Length: 142
Image 1: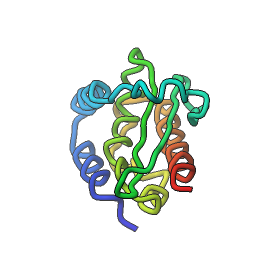
Image 2: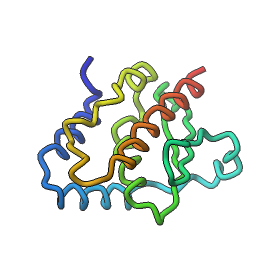
Image 3: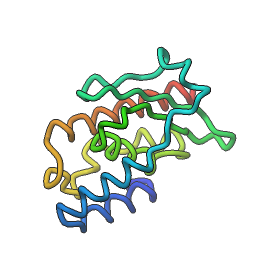
């Protein structure tokens, strides 16, 4: 099954970049990650945590009015690499159906050659964020 269009576009863009461009792009994604909405700050205990990340990452998902899944992430601002990687997922998956989200393979990122720009530990965290976003999407859809 092909990747959702938004995510495929991101993968294709990053795949064609140099190491330096990838780092700059991750920083730009990190800066674009929205803050957790005030209304959800009280819900932190109900958020999905990502133990695969050394940085504290928390995820919550909700259904939008069209039935798509919207994710909200809480990641410290002093973790730009993690914020950038998570923001890629947020940009590529927000608003999609549960079926589209859970169909994204764990290794979808391979064409991006992220290992040129980030450590394997960060990539493992990225894979963990995707897995927990899928879990949060299932909870939101039920």
